[in-house]
Image (cartoon, rainbow, N blue to C red; front, side, top):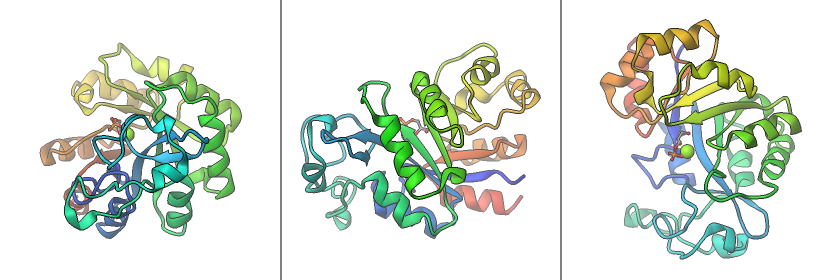
Length: 243
Ligand code: G3P
Ligand code: MG
């Protein structure tokens, strides 16, 4: 099977991460999927942005969890990246799924609940996925593995992916024990032949991130990983097309 090209936070090298502009760019350059990060607003709406706090990528201040959806919607999530993106909003998960479900994109929904705990995040996200009937195009990933287990319990039809950024010994045993479909390691930890063959032997699809170096993309493609998560989907597309 051909390696999938997943645009990290959308095509975040070309447009402000986790905005419609970045997701449109991902479609434009021919990515197979988008990865994006989800938090919960004060009034329990799943919203798409990376950080727990608003300062880096929006005109707001403070924590996402302390703002209502209406307050978050008033913020500019694009001008920090470049002036022509001013007016980009923080998307709701619902908006993203509604807008792109008619495309062929795969959705890697990352629950950002490893630093801030959001009671009800799993339920709210799964409800949204079911509403749009796209269970078979979604992988929910998280650094919070309890949350992945909870998602599997709530809806066994949705696949989960174990995110990690440590040097874990024989991580396939652990990934299987928590019911994950796929494993999403920091790409740095996929460099040894033993690790790669261990995952292969246990039939666990790999989704390494964030692979921005073309040489690394080529190596991982040759290794036959299921997907590569990158800020540069246009570059990755060229590599995958010439293989
Ligand atoms: O899902 C892969 C990657 O997005 C995890 O790290 O910090 O970019 O969300 P981060
Ligand atoms: Mg992420």
